[in-house]
Amino acid sequence: MNFPGIGSRYLRLAQRVLSRGRLPALLLSVSRKSASSERFARLRDDLQQLQGLCAAWWRGEYRAISAQALLAVVAALVYFLMPLDAVPDWLLGVGLLDDLAVLAWVLRTWEGELQAYASWRERQTPQELARIEALPQEGAGG
Image: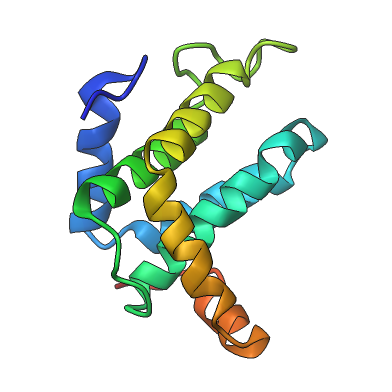
């Protein structure tokens, strides 16, 4: 899997997040960072889609995603969290361009997988979807 601009470092970190049961903590951190500033408004919908997918996978409600696609999604979320990635987030005006590029790559590369999730999502009741995609509580494990 050729992850543009970020290499295998973030894929290895993503594998660690998944194997050590740290996905709930990752989802909470992404949520906090994306809610912390209006600078992330352009990313918010895409991040929420990826967070919902990960939460559904973590709860065992949705497993119809390939291991590679899940790893890429988690790696993109890890990348989003890192303040010192290819273009540091504190560089106003350009600091989010690399985050946008990585998210766009994941959304484009795994479009079929994400469309399948969106179709599955549409078949859920609003109450079930709220439960399935709810972010884990602080201190939640696997």
